[in-house]
Amino acid sequence: LDRSTAYLKERKQFGKALAEFQALQFRLADMATELEAARLLLHKAAGLVDGKAVDATKMAAMAKRLATDTGFKVVNEALQLHGGYGYLRDYPIERYLRDVRVHQILEGTNEIMRVIIARQLLAD
Ligand SMILES: Cc1cc2nc3c(=O)[nH]c(=O)nc-3n(C[C@H](O)[C@H](O)[C@H](O)COP(=O)(O)OP(=O)(O)OC[C@H]3O[C@@H](n4cnc5c(N)ncnc54)[C@H](O)[C@@H]3O)c2cc1C
Image (cartoon, rainbow, N blue to C red; front, side, top):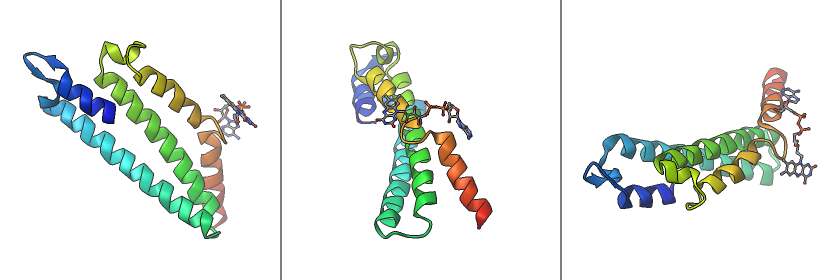
């Protein structure tokens, strides 16, 4: 998000900065909103784990699934906002994309997070 914000201010097309195109401003707004929502769920789940709450496992699975899917979606958006440079090694975005992608697989895949959540919902 930080890299994209800086890049949209720096890169000019059609005689103005990309940051002046409202369609691209909306993309930044959605990225920031979705990151904030994922962070809030993550912090809530962390608090429940610390407090050994009964629903800590379900909430941790929800947070892991949402934070990693959101992370990938946001970096993918960032890559798109960088245009062709996003794909090239000249900029760090392609590396962020590869780094963040594995977290949808590691420490229990996101399908398994859904298994955990659904099992808990159906047991209640
Ligand atoms: C870079 C990297 C580092 C790693 N480091 C470690 C490590 O330090 N320690 C460690 O123990 N492991 C490590 N792993 C392994 C990682 O934890 C596993 O890759 C991960 O748990 C998924 O298991 P799998 O690859 O066997 O996929 P599989 O279990 O074969 O799953 C394949 C696909 O089927 C889906 N799937 C499987 N079962 C179900 C089901 N019941 N319902 C719905 N969908 C299902 C999965 O979600 C996935 O999409 C690492 C993996 C990578 C890529």
